[in-house]
Length: 243
Image 1: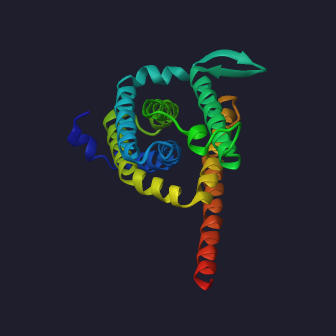
Image 2: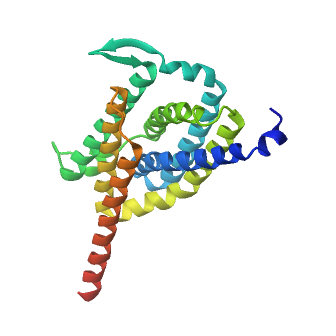
Image 3: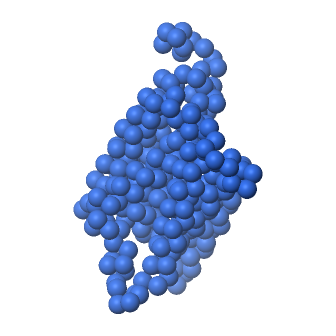
């Protein structure tokens, strides 16, 4: 379809706005993971790691959009387990969910018990620059495949998907450093963010096994938890001012 005719179609604009909102919301999960991960790096490498990780993730998403016909085929069943048909998409979701649960559990362990077997907090939870980039890309691959398959159900126009991805990644680039600094300066937020990652990982595993979990419930629970933590932060600040 001609690009001018495409933009003159109101349904295309509705699909574009919907996709942008969806990509930005899904990007919150990515940003939480990226913030916690890059905060383990030395101060001078953190922002560069975020920019490189998100930039490579953008290239990967655009590459996946170029192979969209192949990605759609990932929903075809490969084998059956206990009456549930498992596709390549399901296996990717399960693997990504297990990775998130493992990573969140590991970070919670380090937060609760920073001195374990003689290791310091930095030594136990630290990582290399390359390892951080690889982990960012692995998780983004999982979310990208899921979001692209969802996007195909909203619009058949690849240019619309590309615009939505570009806008969402731009928002991620702008928000990555402020969010990471906020998490770093508020230790209780780190535990809350890790709990969110645990919840998201469990949801990915459930979806991979054929149990659909409405995203609205997940984000409503996360929003409520964030609101409670915000009230706690306000209360703590007031107590400090009074003291």
